Image (cartoon, rainbow, N blue to C red; front, side, top):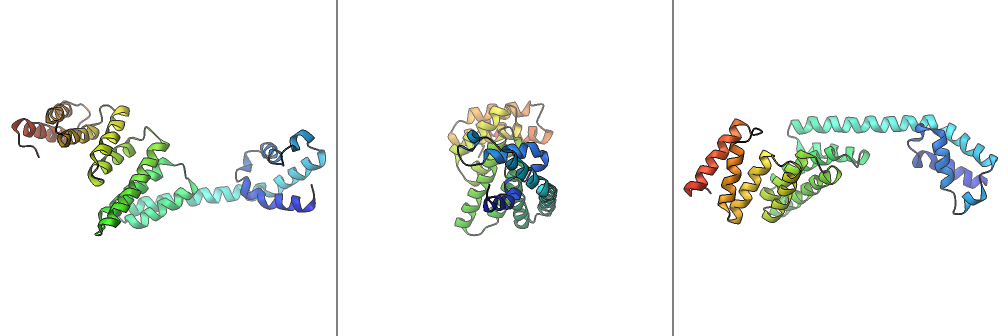
Length: 241
């Protein structure tokens, strides 16, 4: 390995292997695998191994600290975001959630909360185009949460609500609601959504049956049961809107 190549390798180590604290042997194996095509066929000589091991020891403690600092920063972003959200400061909260997502890009919970914040911001928009853009972005966040965790109940439900009531899309609302109920067949909120969809589609008897199920559900609160019974009675009397 010439001096220039060795120097570049040392510079890139902290960027390529932020988790080298898991073990020098593993890093050494990974490093040698990144050599040019055909290198493995030539074998690894003792000098190269020694150079790589020295580089690992040199940067190991620094990388470990960097990883710890980054994780701590991500934690601060999350705490601050949740605190801001609790105070209904959705704009600043969204900024912190997106910063946390830069550190944890595969965290479905962060996407879920980012979606809620973006939705709240969009609903407050006076301009129709800006509102629609915001709702679309909120939908993206919520759907991404579901992609990352297909059993994430809160994200499944929030995404269905958004599609039906904020996107005003009955077809998409039905798709997302049925997706929720496939995973959680007795989900009370999901049944309320589906009942509303059936009314909009012109199937009041199906909606009445769903309200009946909610009224008899062990999962439903007393308030939900009361509302479901009222809705069912209104359908049967022809006064439901």
